[in-house]
Image (cartoon, rainbow, N blue to C red; front, side):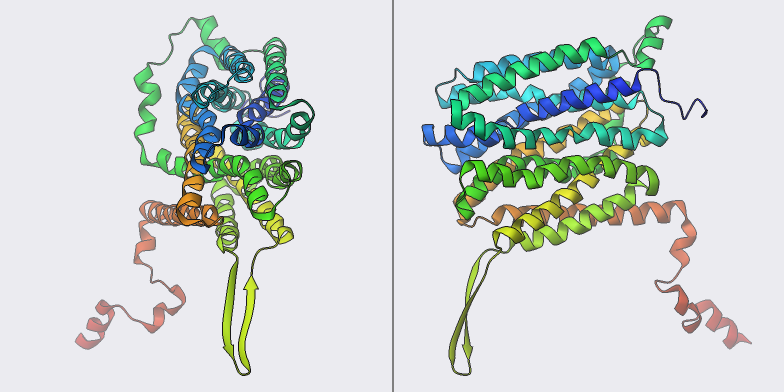
Length: 446
């Protein structure tokens, strides 16, 4: 028997299991344009930028609503809020199948994006059932619902080729509505909410709930999530189009290969949560950013032909990333991102246990905005540069910046907490070789 701080609250297992299932279905709906958007692009004759805007619009809605949904989850409970979110998204997804014009598709896509808001609700809801020592693992399992993107990539192409893209929207909408009702019926309210209601205690003022959002540390966490989650979502949307354009694959094969990125980027999030509990989220973030810098650097390199003046005349050769190497690098990138997604959210219940909804909502919002902004940027870069790998060039610059900020912020915190570190030379083992000025003056005086 563990102590009270080590025990899970009653109903924790069901809350985690059903929340993960619900988030998986929500994520499958949220990324639906990664597949049906390719067909809609052909039917409407959209440009690259217009396609990027359409694919990213649901991500915009699902991002912007996260702070509000997180706060509401803390106030009214995750069960009720998630039910409303899922049913709203299901209705919008069904109406999507009746859209005819580009503006109508954009309006419908805004409603579909409500599905992405379920993440902020789930984080606030699930974390309250588990002690701090297990929250990393629990939130890692919940976050594995990102695999819904792979579900869409695997299943949607077959449904679309057999029955059309409208059938995909209708089937996904119906599934989401059913899971919403099952989730609500099988789960219970958070223990803190139940205790608050029984004691008839007033909810915390809104200003107090939002106060932590003024801290720079929260925004640093948000930048981390902008890359590890925002770039994950962006690539989930962009990869089928990229694989068709660069490697000439059909949409079915492209969807399957894109899942080689989506699946590890989702399922290994569980391992990332467990690892964050064991060795600390900070170390996991270093691994995430280090591996991501390497992968995005190689993925950034465009196919290039060279001509070298050799001894016996010109020598020509070509450097390009073949499909097998591309998939391996992508798999590695997805793995690193999955660890980082869990590590970022391991920080939040530890630093802000009373404001998980608001802080988690902001971090999730910024991360989600990455999933909206980046596909548009990918399309714009394609139009401006004509280089397919420009999307990975942008990601390389982003992750390198995040790594630098994290490292210098950590160094600054370490020196603030341990002032003695500032007095140490850069190479402590050489301290005896370089006496201090005071020591030299003392020897001269003697």
